[in-house]
Image 1 (tube, one colour):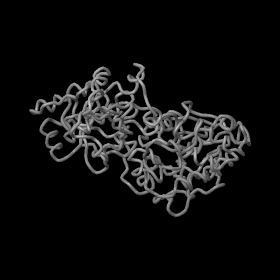
Image 2 (cartoon, one colour):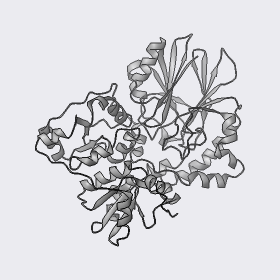
Image 3 (cartoon, one colour):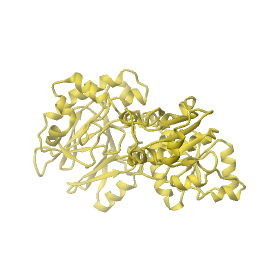
Image 4 (cartoon, one colour):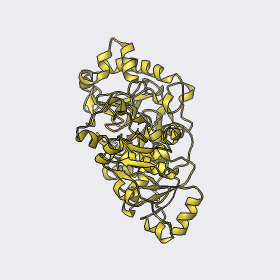
Length: 466
């Protein structure tokens, strides 16, 4: 057997390449959309990709199954569980609980493990030349290292009311099935630390059934279903806005993108024309460089592992957008965007000089230090806005601060004062810079960015309240 774990750090998403070396064929589980990765592995191992499998209809990324099938001719094996509302709308082999999928000398058994979503399945792998006992379990978003999948995404992200409690109870029952498996089985989940698909995912890539029975919080509630449901649903992070779109695109027919597109550099006139049409400009530079001079109306989303998640919060799927980015970073940025289906890139500019050469002027951000902030807090005409997630805010915040999560800021502008000085902050400054750029683009001139955030506040031993 040949096995390779492919991990996308930007979405903390795992996919898997599993091959039978004797037969020279391979399967890919939960492929990301930039599929050249898998084709390169197949070529290196002298294998043909013949099977493509998904654990469920994903919400956090756009699966590359159809792209990979289009290029390789491989058959897609997808869940047929969950009822009529949870069926894929394109050609595939439908999988039910108990089905077995041969791959040369390997065999996958389908386990229906609902809860995260109604159609979720896991794949139990047996390497028959080695043993008749199963050796690996690919769980998707069912069981993670130290955590389990969240059942609230359908309700919070896709608006399907009443699904989170039902899903939580389904998860409780699915975990009983997990508990019945031998303790030696390797567990390979669909996500690791940093994913929004759970609240406490471990950082190591894999685990075993036995280890999770000992250390995963979910198994402390084996005799307490009500307590399990309550604990599971409490404190889940805010699901990114784009999750609802992924649920739609991953089950329906859509245009395929089988290679990473090359972006066109825009000149100053083209940039101005595009902005006049309402196209969005995403400035991917470091937050401090952005603060020293930025193009009016641009949104600062730095090029780091969170880039595509925040792009998914603030870009829509109909309006074209432009990147301000170092040309050397364009390929990686484009990959990050295509992984969540944001393909509508009009072009790019390499620096603010393109804007300046066309006669445009730059704006500067108003950054303040801890000392400045302490002085301002003595005044009455000030509003402090904490942009972190609800769980972070509830764990400890600056006294008197209002809470507006940055992801929902544009829907809550009425909560941001236009008559007072407004100090915004997050944990380390990244989210505050996004918020500053959004508010500046909406015409706010009274925003001050405490860029040190809670990290600096606590480092200086200042008090918080809960």
